[in-house]
Image (cartoon, rainbow, N blue to C red; front, side, top):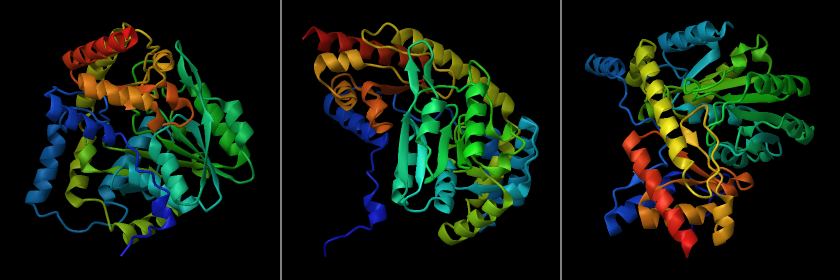
Length: 399
C-alpha cells in the first residue's frame, strides 16, 4: 500500500546538520581520511563525574519508574532557585516544566500557541528547527535578515522586525547566544526586542541554551525583566552547559497557566522525562567550577580557530562572542566557482575530509553566503582542519 503522509509530516524537510556527518563517514571509508568534524553541535567533553555518579546511584536504587509529567519536584525547584538567583527575578517551581531536551520545550511552546495561519517572526539565520516546527503546525515563518559586518558579525535588526509585525503575528523567536553565528546580542538589543514584544502584544520565545558560553561582552536574559510572565516563554536545558546532550533534559519556563497546559500535553505525548537522568541533573548545579573550566577551554579554542580562519583566502570571519560556532562569509569563493555553500561543504568533505555545515541549512536567505564551523574539538584538530580548508581553497581557486 502506498504511503500518504499527513500534511504535518509532509511539511518537514528533514534537512539537518547530521546529513553532512553521514557524508563524512562515507568519505572516510572510501578515501581513508581522518575526519575533522567542524560540524559538531555539542561539547566534546564527557558529562561531569558528579552528574554521572548521581544518575548511577539513582539506577542502583531502582529510581526507574515514571515521574510526574512536569518532572520531579526537586529538579523543578532547583531550576527555579537557580534562575531566581542568577537573574534577580523570582521564578517559582510551578513555572518550570522539565522536558526530554530543549527541543521538546520548543515544540511544546509552539504547539500550545501557534494556530494555522499564525505568523512567527524568526531573525535570520537561525536554528533550523524553529521554522520547521512552525510550518508543521500550519504557522507561517517570517524570516527577517539580521545585519552583518565582518567587524561586528550579526546584529538584530529591530526596525525590520517591527516592520513585518502584522495582526497575524503571534510570536518572535529569539536565540542568544546564537546558533549558527556565534553572536552575542547586546543588552541594548535584547531590551529593545523585549519592549517591542510587549508593545505589540506578541509572545517572545527565548532559547538561551548557550547562556554560559559567553567569551566577550555582557549577556542579558529575557528573565531579567520583572514583567517576563506577561509575554515570555524561556527555553534552556542541560545539554550544552553540562555536556549532557545525549541525556535529553531541557526545561521551559513560563507563567503557571502555560506550564499546566504543557504538563497536560506532556502526560499525553511522552509521559515524563527520564527518571534517573533527572536525578543526575540535580547534581549539575554543583558543577559550576567544572563549567567555568570548560568555558575557559572553549575560549582558547575560539581564539585558535579565529586566528587560523583569518589565514584562509576569501574567508571573512567575525569573532564569535558566544556559543561555540563561527560563521564565515565565503561569498567571494562561491561567486568565483559558481557554487552554493552546500557545494562547498560537500566538496570539502570529499576532497579533504573536513565537515562544515552550509549556511543554507540555517537560512534560505542569508545562509547562501556562509558556512558554520564549530570549535568544540581539540586545538590540534582545529589547526589541522583549518589547514586542510586553506589547502582546499587554494587548490580550487588556482584551477
